[in-house]
Amino acid sequence: MKKFKLVNEYILSLLDAKETGSGLAIIETEKRHHCMPSYGMIHMFYIVKFYDDSIIASVPLNTSEKVKAFLRENVEKYDIDDNLFVSPLKELAKEEAKLLFNKELKGSWNSFVFACDAETIAKPSSNITTVKITDNSYECYGDVNFPDHCVPNGIVYSVIENNKIVSLAHAHKTGKYQDIVADIGVDTSKDFRKKGYARECVNSVARHVIERGGESVYSCSPNNTASIRTALSAGYKPYGKILIFTIDSD
Image 1 (spheres, rainbow, N blue to C red):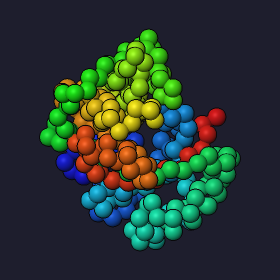
Image 2 (cartoon, helix red, strand yellow):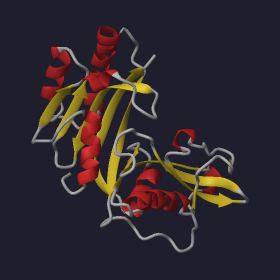
Image 3 (cartoon, rainbow, N blue to C red):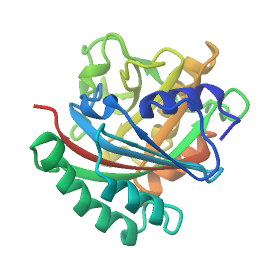
Image 4 (spheres, helix red, strand yellow):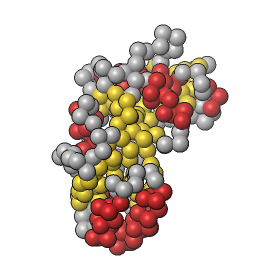
């Protein structure tokens, strides 16, 4: 974990943690009561298991002892994407959502997390050209979704064919470290996959901040093998795993 200094600071800022130590740290924080930028929802439980085996569980203020006891007893026994850990914690999260917020649990997701910096980022391809997008003047092809929340203040690079965006990557407007840590999202039309477009868009967004002294972070589903390949081919290194339980912010 210690290699990626800026990514470390960024992830710790999301968790409201100062540093990691060995084993589990439970952080009760007001941040878990507020909407996350770019997501439109509250990340009620935000758990990160780093690849140095340190674990931070960021939870709301006044979280019950039942939840904290479950975390202490199980988070090192199981991986945080193991259903033997996720399923019972989900039931506890439902109770906490009602107890603390008087809301229903909205959902949950697991992510693999990768990071890169100037030392690890792959060389750009000489065969694929990406274009920096600063407005919505380009139409998206078919099933590609334009990241409106990233224009004009975010970072968006795309591959254009026939004057349409067929693949793009963007850095979320996180409100934290967004000019020096690119938190990557990527979308490529199913008709233009396996051409290296996603890899090159991701590489371009990462380079945008790396050339300015920054670093980049990339998250995807553990089951998304294509996205994992994209991250690794762009020079990202395994960083950790994330488990998030969400509620609506309304």
